[in-house]
Amino acid sequence: MYKEKVLQTNEMNQKTAKFLDKFVKRVKANPPGVCPIAVQLAFLQSSRSQTCGKCVPCRDGLEQVENMMREILEGKADMETFDNMVDLAKMIQDTADCAIGYEAANIVLQSVELFHDEYMSHIKDHRCQAEIGQKVPCISHCPANVDIPGYIALIGEHRYADAINLIRHDNPFPTACAFICEHPCEAKCRRDLLDSPVNIRGLKKFAVDQVAADQVKVPPCNVATGKKVAIVGGGPSGLTTAYYLSLMGHKVVVFEERAQLGGMLRFGIPNYRLPKDRLDEDINAVLSTGNIEVRLNTAVGKGKEVTMEQLMDEYNAVYIAIGAQTGKSVKVEGVESNGVYSAVDMLGEIGRGNIPDYSGKRVVVVGGGNVAMDCARSAIRCKADEVTVIYRRRQIDMTALPSEIQGAIEEGVELLTLHAPLRIKADENGNVSAFVAQQQMINLYTKQGQPGAIDANKPELEVPCEVVLMAIGQDIVSEPFEEFSVNPRRKTFETENTTRVKGYDKVFAGGDCVFGPATVIKAIGAGKIAALNIDEYLGYHHKYLDDIDIPEPKENNRNHYGRVHLTDRSARERKKNFEPVENGMSYDEAMQECGKCLRCDHFGCGVVEGGRV
Image (tube, rainbow, N blue to C red; front, side):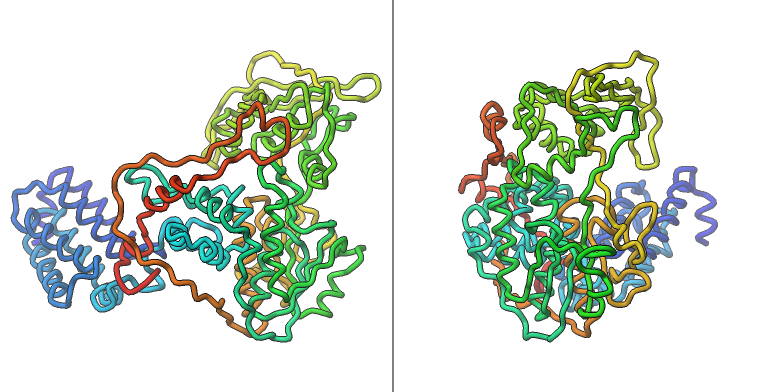
């Protein structure tokens, strides 16, 4: 009977039937973290909008099924509602006049069969199952999975110390991330459906500005296990792993090649973005756990003070978190001239307190990422006469944060886009005299979804300069560890899903040295996962001691508010020194932003009662 009906449908219904067939496959392969009932409800709403309204089963029946499914999703239904929904769906399947009604009902019945346990969880427990429940978007898009609605609620209750400790549950660098995190969480904030995302990073900064992180006592450590773990690298990933392993009760020894801890947080990010005394607040808190020993000025690897073989003999596990500490260069004529430097090296010297003097000099920075902006803005503060950033694509294609680009422009940096490096000219003494670039034209899109650039049929451009800073990427110095499954091309460590280095039971690796140069929060997330995996490898399954009481959610404030943006100090003043450029929120601004949070951890898709996700 149904086949005869489908044959009589018009071309539109045939296309709809094909779409529905694809949708069935999507439901069967429901992605993890997405509530299948919510997916089904969205589909029913879409189906109802396509009905012609001529037959009662499709016109009225689908609406009733949708209402009953919504009650189930919201945790307000009982088994009678469920049974009525199933019976009505069967009736629509048998009596609908076209593919829209039939297939919509059919998919409801298939979802009931495929996700029966999920329906029962919503009816009996009033929430999604833990393993497939809809995740809160801001939490799921944070690489460290920080409980963002929780700490925003705590800030709203003026419980700043508790907010800091809740952040530490997943990220031991609340202060550093308050200053420099790229906040991927905000990109998926559901508040954007109403007006604009909550300023999550700004609220974090407000919290750590009220109470210094090292003045907030860290959670107590578990009972000592007698296990020892060596961590190679004292950057964000290594220190994150050290922090959590220490809380678990393991003894940790951190081997750091440089004279201070912090990695690229200290030696790669200028003080005007991340004040080093504020970074020290996080590091002091990490070390305050009491189970962490630090050995500075101690290099590890082949031909170094300590070899990997020694660590493997002496420790129960080893975690390699050496980061990406050196800069890459462009292979162009004249790159060996005096005055050509790596941007990473330049920023590293500034991090050590060795501020270069560019008085009377013109500086060219090659690149379009955050490191390039850091270099350009630092060069301004080093008293350069002119600073020009050269980038081969458009400004919109730059990988630097828009706020960093805007900040550089305000401070007097010139952006020379759609120009590719061609050669560097030097005088008779080998000193840089000019940078020559070839004009570009935008071209076909790449596989990464970004338009490429090719040489344009235009004349070369010569930019007079005395200093060239190469900011085209970072490199990993993995040669001292080359026998430990290092990819010779990418120079990264090859690891299993457990973050264990392939071929070695007790050696783990994470952070930039595994996935390549990335963000600080991603390195922190990798360190957290490594700590959990190492703990499992050592034979434990520790849980953090956490007794923070999260405030109950208030009724959502759905009035439309403008977003509170953090402001900067005046460009004419801030460019004269390396003092912090960003202003914090006022109390009123912070409370307004806290009030915008929709508390998706309680009111999110499929999560209504029975606790947090």
